[in-house]
Picture (cartoon, rainbow, N blue to C red):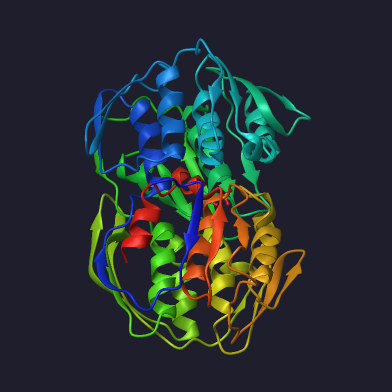
Length: 433
Ligand code: S3P
């Protein structure tokens, strides 16, 4: 299927049981930790998306053997300090998680690595990891001291730090905790609101000493080894969210999404939908490899508007553009505040979603740190020739697909293939419903 331009047609209802792709955040972390383990690890059901291949290929360049079969990655760990300087630059593509988390591991290896990325990633700030890593003793040069290309030189003599971040960022937290595994002493990281905690869960599952009090994380350094492990990656709640939204919005729909990670730090979107009146239940709840997993059952629902406060943002950071789409259908005015981080994602997601939805007739106002969305709006493209760009941002493309499913006439999404960074197969699944 040609995925650069996709015509989006209105849908009537969906009634199905589906699976969505495996979790991106968990796959990145599992690949990295397996690479510095002391033997063969098996990652069952990894996400095979472009972003995850950025991480896999980076680790291959750093000397890690990774063998792939249909449903697994076999990763032959090289021990904590066994990474080698790569012969070529590492291209992280579109993946911020690859750059930011990988730097935490490179920090403790005596190697020099140059990292580049695509246009979008080259515009995203790296100072947030450069500052704490430098304080720990890592040498880093970056364009304007903030952007890729970045050259990082790790050291065997990392010092522990206490680092308080003013923003909630799982990527920065994970970077500092990874580096903290190598440092002399205890590294302490504090964040203002709890961001996704997959790193903490995985480290604890692997027996690394990490203590957690509210949003303060203390990791004991000089970790000698990570034992080889196996892990099964559950489905990605962020990928599930697009289909959850469609089932809620389309009358007479009923949808089951199997085996989804329902980690509370990722449940912001579902919790907000529940407060708005959505009929969503979890069934078959269980814990797999220290992550809660369940089937999500969704029925079409009438929604009322909501106010999103800064504290609500981290648990639904990637779903906020989609919430804007959903809010156009709610009864009342929805307000999203404290979401300034959206401006430095794969695109400026406040600007891109606001302008795209305005083209579909939504009444939506851009704020510096969020948006205001009027509800009860009929979405309608001004002509069948309307082309909306994804801005090469996967979450914008998929949010617009949901908007299109309830839009009165059809329109085209350009650069739609960008969904492959997190959700290969999205368009096939979307069209099959
Ligand atoms: C991610 C953390 C979030 C999220 C991103 C993936 C992760 O970014 O937006 O898609 O896997 O740690 P920040 O931690 O920078 O907010």
